[in-house]
Amino acid sequence: MRIVTWNIKGAKRGSPVWKYLLDLQPDIALLQEVVSMPEEISNNFDIKSQNAMRKKLDKPQKFSTAVLVKGKIIKNISLSSEYEWVNRELILFKGNFISCIVQTANTKEIKVVSVYSPAWPVDKNRLINEDVSKVKLKSNPEVWATEILWSALKNTVSDTEQWIVGGDYNSSETFDKEWQDKNGKRFGIRSYGNKEILDRMDAMGFAECLRKYNDGKIIPTFKHTRNTIDHQMDHLFVSSDLYSKIERCSVGDQSIIFGKSLSDHLPIIADFKVN
Image 1 (cartoon, one colour):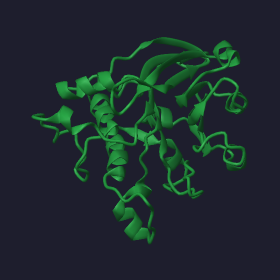
Image 2 (cartoon, helix red, strand yellow; image 1 turned 90 degrees about the vertical axis):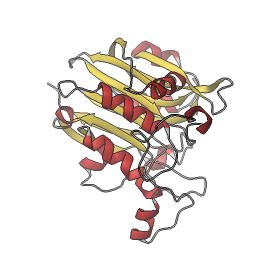
Image 3 (cartoon, one colour; image 1 turned 60 degrees about the vertical axis):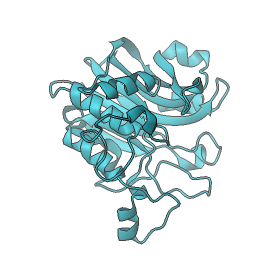
Image 4 (cartoon, one colour; image 1 turned 120 degrees about the vertical axis):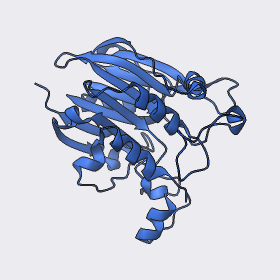
C-alpha cells in the first residue's frame, strides 16, 4: 500500500501535478490546496473533499483539502474533543481536517485525516473566557489549528484502530528558536512549540513516517520564496501497528517538482507491506 501526502499549491484540472500524482500510483492520497481535479482522477479514486476556511471566516478558500482512495470511502469520521470550545473550532475548521474511514482492495478499514493547518492562529476573540490551558502548547502563547486537531484526536483515537493523519502542518522543528540556536541557523521564522506538536503526536502512539524511517533526520519538504529548502512542514503520521509494516518513506523529486514549479511542497511517499 502506498500513501502520499502533498500540498499541490492550488493545482487545477489541467496542471501537470495530476500526471505526477498518477505516476506515483498511490492507494491513498492526502492532498491540500486543491482547486480542481481532472476526470482521470475522479475515475481512479473515491474522493472526499471540502474547501478550507479563510482567516476572516467570511467565505471559504478557493481550494480544498482532500482524501483520495483507490477503493472506497466507507463513511465520515466525526472528530470531537472533550472541550466544547474545541468542538466549535472543529466546525469552523471542517474544510481543513478531512476525516473518513477508507478501505483499499488489500486492506481492512483505516481511519484517515487529511490536514491543512493554516499559517495563522485561532482568533483570540473566539477564545475569550475559555480555559485553553489543557489544549494550548506550553511554549507558544497562541492556539493553532494543530492543537485543535490534537485535542480531537486525543479524544477519538483508539489503540485497536489503524490511523493515517497527514498533510501540510505549516509547522517544522527548524522554526523553533531553540533548534536554530542549537544548530547555528537563523531563519526568517523564529517561533516556539513546533517540536512540541511532534512530541504530542508521538505520545499518542503516532509515528512520523518521514522522520522515523530516516533515523530522525529532518527531510525538508518546502521551498521558501527565497529559494531555500530547509523546513519539513509536511508530515505523515501513522498508528504504531501500521508503522510496523513500513517498507520505505521518501519525498518526491525536487528537480521535477521545484524545477517545473509543480508545487512549493514535496510529496511524502510511504510504502507499507499490508498483505
